[in-house]
Amino acid sequence: MRENVVMETRVRFAPSPTGHLHIGNARTAILNWLFARHTNGKFILRIEDTDPERSVEEYIDQILQDLRWLGLTWDEGPEIGGECGPYRQSERLEIYQRYAQKLMDEGNAYFCYCTPEELEQMRKESHARGEAGFYNRRCLHLTDEERQQFIAEGRKPAIRFKVPDNSEVIFNDIVKGELRFETENISDFVIMRSEGIPTYNFAAVVDDGLMKISHVIRGDDHVSNTPRQVLLYQALGFEMPQFAHIPMILGPDRTRLSKRHGATSLDQYRLKGYLPEALINFLSLLSWSSKTGDEILSIKRLIEEFDFERVSKSAAMFDFEKLNWMNGQYIRSADLERIVELAKLYFRAAGYPVEDESTIQKIVAVTREKIETLDQIVDVARIFFQEKITIKDTNAKEMIRLDSSQKVFWSFLRKLREIDVLDRENFKEIMKSVQKETGVMGKNLWMPLRIALTGQMHGPELPVTAEIFGKEKCEMLIERAIFK
RNA sequence: GGCGCGUUCGUCUAGUGGCCUAGGACGCCGGCCUCUCACGUCGGUAACACGGGUUCGACUCCCGUACGCGCUACCA
Image (cartoon, rainbow, N blue to C red; front, side):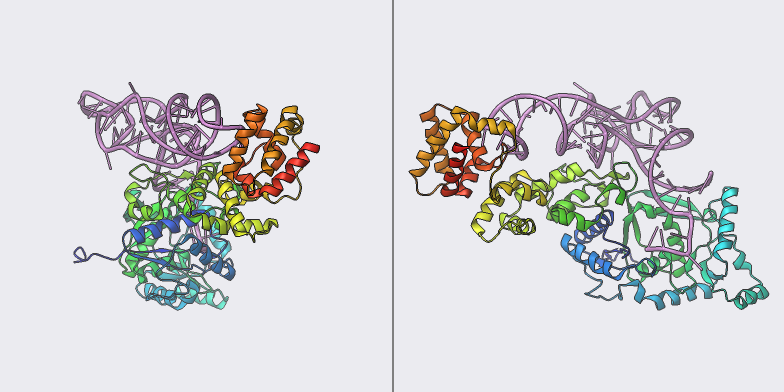
């Protein structure tokens, strides 16, 4: 029957507020979002904050902010609600209890009174025997006296799911293909902790089921959890979603990307001056590729083209070099006004005055050409804000003392005084006539001017730099270079 | 230890049995552009983990080995 109905795609991103939004999780969020938009479905945000030990309220806001910064708008979730709320697991505790009770009533789950020490012992023993699972099902076969005894001792029970014997869990993963697991290798696992809080595997299934999630898209570190969840779906009678396990992102040492590898939280990237669309583009290209072979892809194209057919099965290393290159591409092609606004943030932090809008715009236009992350604009633009010029480079010092350089300065000065307003065009004209007059050309002509004006041998286009400085400042700087 | 997943240039990848003398991108190297750096542009460097099958033919299919990663919690 349901073959005829075109089911609406409903995907979810379910972060746990135990820290900042990790770059790997951001990628998972991006792929979920892309798929939702591609299929015209819904992108649902759910907060998995069942562990009070590790969940921190502030991180929820942080994560929401990060997601918004990326532009990943959600259709249901915190702050906007939806038909399947609440969207915070800590507010759904009664729901999990109800379904756990249902499993107990139907004989699919049972109380477990084992202590951490007892469990640890079992783990050791089964490990020594070379088995996969570890729980020996002691509490499944408890006599009434034993049970009374534990209760009398004040032991609070957890609830374990009873894994079917001798069967095989088979499911089709959209990216990995058919996956099979013997239940013999899965021991009865806890679904409700003794404090009445659900475990991840249980809460995720109950919520995904109730929220009618059609595709579970997550990192492939969850593959091993999936058979447990499949069993739960079956026992609970929920419709099974499709699973798509996307490959991990690795650090330079080929282990899963983590803090050890440097910047891993999204806000660090924002602060350093990466553009959200660059990050989305780059992250999308980790284990996915456009069939056109293009690599610079707009959000629009990403939405149009994304599908699981082209997601690869193997993990991908995070390549900072390529991200930087890509970010540079986006910085240069973005609307200038936008980059100006962002650049001002960095200028202000560096103490540069940003009041003169048209000057700032010119500065950004010429300096964005040379940076890969926005924070680098502070260094490149320093020449426009520095109080006085100090020449550190000895080659540069020697250069301006050259007779030919001094001749150039004098000639340039004379011609500069003849004009009213200096701009990039008449700067070039002046240079031409200075060349004619002095016979100095090429590097010997330009470099002394560059050094006199900026104190450095490298920098933005000189005509533009001179225009930004203006006639008076140039005049003053060249005079100084003459008498040095 | 057990279970699962993976393995094409340094890195991200294309490749679905002949189109592969393995293509593109980042990086790197060199040329051009040029006052410099960067941009841009042109060219170069560099890979099918290994061993068996299957097949007229294997990067592509099957099996094994090696290596890597993940899971193996009353974390998610």
